Image (cartoon, rainbow, N blue to C red; front, side):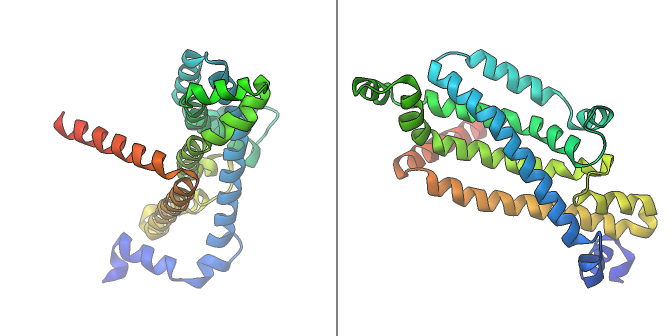
Length: 243
């Protein structure tokens, strides 16, 4: 019978309207998950984009970008979620947002730096020849041309954060992870379907975010750059296949 295996139990759990509408149900947890993830990505953007774009504009700091990215990636999110609640942030959503923002920094920072450095130097020279200051070149020339790269970093960071935000349940931070942790609290024998259902919801949300932001990234990327990226991706795939 379908209810005798975790997959069947997950289907039954997901098809129960009360599991969606009750307080602490899927809809409540989904709202928390989106809020936590969105706040973390925005905080990461506020930190990483200005630094990455300025370093790219200045033409130096490539090593610093790599170092910062590697350091932030080397710090386990679970470790941050364990440490930050012991600070003034306390338990709940604030430490989760900060921990996920740290996790979001590497792709945001790297793409911001790469986006500015990839701009044709002649475009900068032309802007300076028109009498624009350094800040004006950054704001009027480099920023618009770097938008596709910023969108790519935003997409990567958002998907990573949405998938990782399930760990918020470790510090009572809310989100879809609470469904999974509640299931483990009841035991896999009793709530195996709930645990699997929570994992499915997190995975589906990450896929949906990826799909939506892929459309946005394509919309803000000029056609010539789309073709160039497509050729680069095909070359990378061919090289990987032949390795």
